[in-house]
Length: 219
Image (cartoon, rainbow, N blue to C red):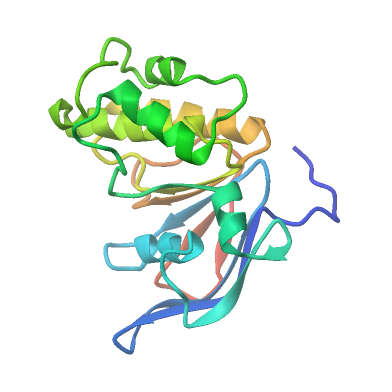
């Protein structure tokens, strides 16, 4: 996919910095994610990967820098329209069934065109679990259900925090297929990973936290 030179990135940040209790967590960082590509954010535990995603999602406020979404300074309404966020917390109702959860979340966040909750469950390997309460699922099944929520979202930009965690090899391949399909449809993804096995086979760049600010590798 070739972008026009005049097409702004879906997400861009300049001079982004975050501190906690006066201790620097990351930054200043410059980064951008174009439609049709993934930015892989790597780093050891404590490098600030999760914090970076929370800042980009608007859940934490940076100490400095600017975040743009589709060429405009990010506002709350832009984030709700453009961003789907997968965190370590699954954002699922434990005492609702899997299908009830997806219907509830689609009511809050909207739904991708021509995609239905039942189909999303089948895509992530949870067909037959429609009435199973979330609290009865394994950690891997909960992750799959959270991935179904992301798949149903109409947002073009996915922020995925360790999406491979708690998944077996089949689940890892599922994540890669989902990211590939999302990018082919014009979306983009920012994926945090330790970098050992997690590298979706898509057009991507790598940002390593904990080294020179703003350093990105093309891949």
